[in-house]
Each structure stands twice: as C-alpha cells, then as structure tokens.
Image (tube, rainbow, N blue to C red):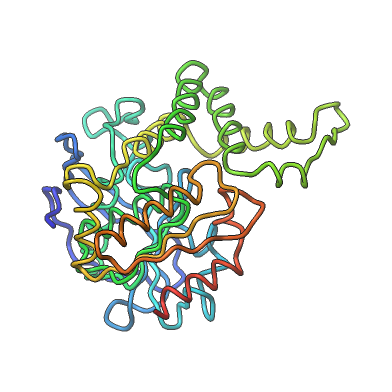
Length: 351
C-alpha cells in the first residue's frame, strides 16, 4: 500500500549495535485527516544484525513507552540468547507518532512558531502511526519483518503495520489488543482526558491513577496491598497510586497523553477497508500468520476481545491462533510475565 507521506527519507545505515536511541528526519507527512506535518522526526533503536545479515523484528511500545525496548520495557526479551535473539535477528523499535520520546508529537517545536505544538497537535490514528513505522523501515533498508509484535496500543499499531503491507510481514503478534477499541476503554479514556483538560498536571496524575486500576487486577491489588496502611495513614494502594501519578507527571505531559489516547479511541482495523473480514482477508492473502495473545483477568482489553480478533482472522482465511498469558497481573502482564512471553514469541518465530 502507498504511504501518504509526501517526503522521502534518504536511505541510512543502521546505527552500531547497542547505540542509544537515535533520530531520523523523514520530511513531510500527511495524516489520515488530510493535514500535513511539515517535518516528521522519528526516534528509533535497532539491535542485532542488519537487514542484509538477518531477518528483522519490529516491536511496538504501549501508551507511555519509548523506542528503548531493548534497554527498558522489554529488555528481558531482547538480546543474545533471549526470545528475540539479537545474535540472529535485528530488532527495531520506534517511538510512536505523537509520542514523548523523540518522535514528532505535542512537545515538538511547531515549524512556524518554534514553540511546542501542545494542544494544537493534529489528531493521529494508529494507522498514521503504522505508516510512520514503515517510513522508518524504508529509510533503514528494511523491506519486510519476520515478526511484528506489541502490547496494548502497541498491539493495535502492530495490526495496522501488517494491514498496511501484508505481503511484507510474516508473523503478527498483537498482545492484549483488540481489532477495534470498545466502548468501555473509550469511556475510561474520556474520564482521563477530561481530568487532564480540567486540572492540568494534577489531572494527568489522576488520569494515571485511574489507568493503573485498569492495568492491574483485583487479585494483584489484593496480594500486593490488601488493606495495609502506610505510616501517614494512607491505605497502601492509595500511596501506590499517588506514586504512580507523580512519576508520570515527572516524565510525560498531558497533551501527549491526550494525543495517544485519541489514537487508541479511533482504532478500528476494519475502517475504510470494507469491515474486519475484508481487512483480515488481506492478511490471509499476504500469508501473515497471526498469534493473538490475551491476558487472564485483563479488564481493559481482555481475552474476549483478543479471541474476537483471532476469530475474525480465521473467518477471513488467515492462519491465526489464540494464546493466553496466565497471570494475576492483569493488563500489564505483557510487561511482567517474561517466561511465558519468551515461550510464546519463540513459538511464533519457530512456526
């Protein structure tokens, strides 16, 4: 499929293995809504061999993540001898469009004013984000991916990456991600973004606290906190939520949170493709193998939603299967259950 971006990046060599996250200038980029970003910049990290030497893998971060998968949020899965073995696979991760860590987003300078875009940053979709990832891949000389994987928002974008170029993706692994965002998740996002709009930084902290109650499970909170109290009299779970909110305020911002939550809200793989069956028919035609991974006890994008994605893919003729993480950690299990994830990623690559 054709990228709507109006500029072409110069082919660049990948950075030396292990170099920190670096940036790439990609020129103008036209969004789904028809608006154009004049100067698209993308931050990425690549580990392992180059496309000329080995198959390549794309991993995609969740809502507040960064391109530093190998050094941060998926570090136990990426490296020599690990599930994504950098002795035999190249691993790419890119900060998503609209993000906070190096890719063009609300904190980037507006080309006309030099001030941050802030709340004027245009609405982006998971499809826009996927097309940016392909722009980065093109610039780095990566023509196809042996595996595309991500959790939550990352799983939604992973699905869009495969749908943009189904003949260039071998295996797709969306984790705790639906084919289209449902009303409950949209409702939670509405409350969070309203808090940010009305209360600024305090609202961002509260939004994070609310989000954390959807990322974890009742069993996890019972086990970790029970009805325990801190020395100041706060319940231990309240102290934990206060800490999580303050941490996010220190490293993130409300405009970025709003932009990325908006991308999640509008996610619908069947939009403008004739519905899900037609969309997944393209995956079947392209030979994409799908492993949808649900998480036991996930209240945000639970097993039912992931099973529905897999069922739609099977109905369209795709080679698709469902797997499940057994955990009491809830939605965040895709950032915790390393042994199970290792097994499932190795299975996907082996098949």
